[in-house]
Image (cartoon, rainbow, N blue to C red):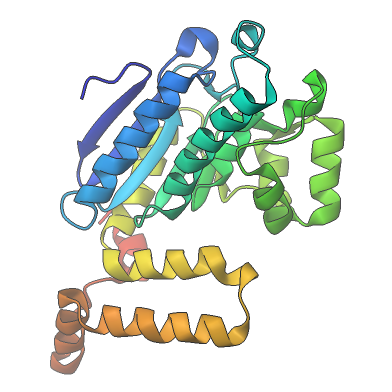
Length: 271
C-alpha cells in the first residue's frame, strides 16, 4: 500500500511507523488514521515472524499536535457525524493498544491533545528533553479523546489526571518521567538509536508470551480475580505449547545460555 500521511518501515524485526505531516506538526487527519490502521494490520499479520517490536514516532519537530484544528471548522459538527468519526478513531486506538508486539512511542516535541493519548497507549513511552505532553482539549472547549479518560488515571492517578486535563498545561519529559507518565527520557541527538536499541532487546523476547501477557494486562483493571485466573490458565496453556518455551526448557536442562536474558543483553550493549 502507498501511505499518504505515514512512513512505514521494517528492519531488524522492528516495524517503525512515523506520522508524516511535519508541516502541520503531524496533526491527525482521517487519512492518517486509515494509514495507521492499515500499518497495524500489516504488523499484526507479521507479528512473531519478521516483526517482533514496533516504534511509533513523528517526523520533524513534533510527535503529533493532536487533531487538525484548522480542518475542524470545515467538517460537519453534527453529533451523528462526530460520533461516527470518533468511533473510527477508537477502532484504531484499540488496534494500537492490543497489537501483540511491544510498542515503543518516541516523542520529540509536541504530543498534544489526541497526540498525547496516542503516545501514551504504547507499552513504553520515551521522550527527548524537548518532548512534552499536553491534554490540550480545554484550550478549545473540548474533553479528552483517543482514550485519555482511560489512560491517564491508570498511569498517574485520578487527582493528577484531573490537573492535567483541567489546566491543559505542558508536561515536559523530565516531569513526565517523575510522575510516571512516561518510561524514560532519551538523548536529544541519540533518541532513535536508544529507542531502536531498546526495541532490539524486546524483539528477542518470546512474542507469543508477550502478546498474551499484554492482552491480559490490558484487561486486568476491569476483571475480578477469578476471571483473571481463568485468563491466566488459558494464556499459560498457549505459551507452554510454543517452540520458544520448549527450546527454553531444553536449554535450561542442558545448562546452556537462555534464549532471553535481559541482564546479559544490558551487559553486552545492544545484543
